[in-house]
Amino acid sequence: MPRVQGFKAIVIGISTGGVETLKALLGALPKDFPLPLIIVQHISPGSGRGMADLLDEVCDIHVKEADEQELPVGGTVYLAPADYHLMVEQDGKLGLSTDPPVNYARPSVDVLFETAAEAFGKGLVGVVLTGAGCDGSRGLKRIKAMGGIAVVQNPEDAAASSMPNNAIMAVTPDYIVASADLPRLFIKLSKSE
Amino acid sequence: MTTTDEIEEIELGLLLDGIAKVYGYDFREYAEASLKRRMIQWLSTSGFDSFGQALPHILRNPVIFEGLLRGITVNVSAMFRDPFVFKTIREQVTPYLKTYPFVKIWHAGCASGESAYSMAILLEEEGLKGRFRIYATDIDREVLSKAQQGIFPLKEMRQFTHNYQKSGGRSSFSDYYTARYDHAMLMPSLKEEIVFASHNLAGDGEFGEMQMVLCRNVLIYFKEHLKDRALNLFHSCLADGGFLCLGTKETLDGRSIAPYYQEIAPHTRIYRKRYA
Image (cartoon, rainbow over all chains, first blue to last red; front, side, top):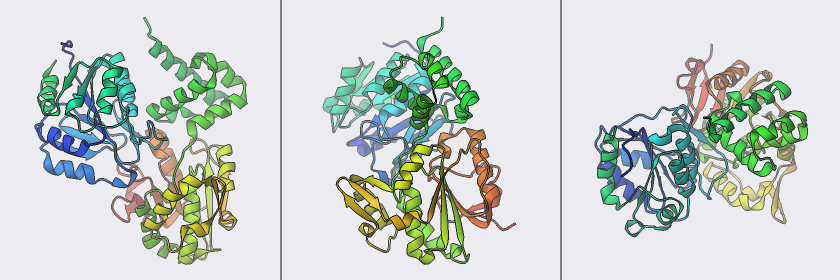
């Protein structure tokens, strides 16, 4: 069991099969879930804001597209906008960039994770869910190195297993769970002090 | 005990102080997360082990500094990025621009020129040929000379063509370039409408009066103070009734100049300056 440490935020990386997984996960979280959730979901450049609107519609918790210089607050899910990297600044505010793709992706999970690790240190939960490729592995390693904890979806439970598999090879996760168990785990972690 | 990470942070700070003093480029007003990523990226290819080791070389050798400057500031874009924005410019901005005998447009932070050339094509198609000039500026002189060439990788053309069509292009995009090996050269006549010039939003002053200012996905790299400096600069050179076009994730909300502007269509971040 990781020591109890008063988490400040949850960051999530997700790709192939993401929409359905996110619908179920975010849909099961209460409106007053105390931590901000910051998410990079790989989407094509022309996607627009449809994804955030769609999830906001079906979830109790508030889902929005991340704005730059926005201070993430509890009870809110921040999705990376299409064709931008999403980052966390040292002061905890969100930042965006149009820097070149990382791991062929913009937004990239590694970019979010690495910057969030710097900002939140041991107060961070990093979560790698279903997806193809290796985006998120390096970032998860950084999160662990800075004292945060790593959660990975059980590859057998994932629509696409290579992102979780690569994450498990990169770090020793604190939790490997099926997506159905994620809401309960998030609620438990959010209550640790 | 100071950790290696903390020491890196301290060295980075010293380096930025030194660069500001020696070269006059102040990156302390840039958003930290992306600046730091870019600097670490530069460091990994520089041959130096740390910012501390690189510091005296950067401060004493302008050639090394130029390389770092490029690493920090270079931006890549696409022609007609966010096609709906260019569609809105085509449909809702050009009718006003046409009422002027001659239109001046400032494109700040033009990087390798994708967006400036897009505007030139759009304005020509809307009947403004010969009646406009685009002043395309960037902090980096080398990227400007690249922009001036108007040559892009051929593999980008598919995306550019797609964007052009979605932006309401009236012609065939292939009319605007010649393919050579793996590169595409834009029609030289487009360049005649564009003046490329060096300008630093963190230090330099304004141009003459403009009917339109475009500055897209540049302010996201700036901290608050520098954002306001740039916006005030744009405000002071925009004519009443002129247009300010920001990136789709940039906004005037909460900015001091906001009361003087109105967004012309939701989510486009194309603002029109009110008549005084």
